[in-house]
Length: 158
Image 1 (cartoon, rainbow, N blue to C red):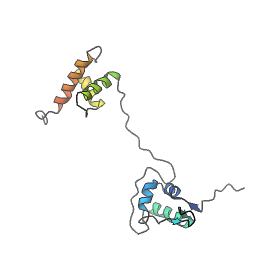
Image 2: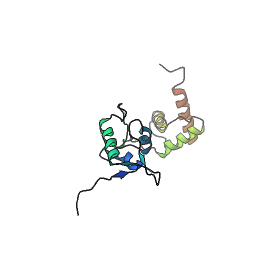
Image 3: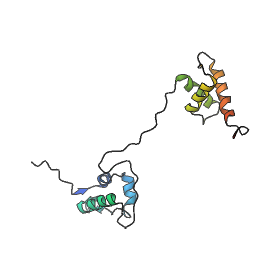
Image 4: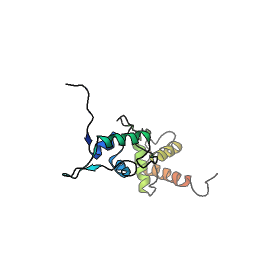
């Protein structure tokens, strides 16, 4: 038995897309312009790529020059060696329960664009010692007024 893995002689569209590191949808969008059309099995009418077209698609992906001779820009999350490159999201600071309650109250008052970061900053500015045992209604009112007057037309640019 040989340890060498033989490449497939025929692949379907999904496998072809993954071989070149693109999503199926993006690969299908580029077929005909950048990538060649698949051949179809007469009996099953399924699209497939034989070895010759597989090599052509991989060459197109590596060179960035499409079948029509035009340059093709590939934006993908996949690298060519098969590993996914996942962008990292910035870490969100943990939202404590008090800020979450204040945010919920502010949104209920109609300020739906408020974020937890804005509310957290306002709470720190207005209550440096912390909210503690203060009345939740008064806290929501104070933060709401602070946020609504923060970027009022009269004080923008000061």
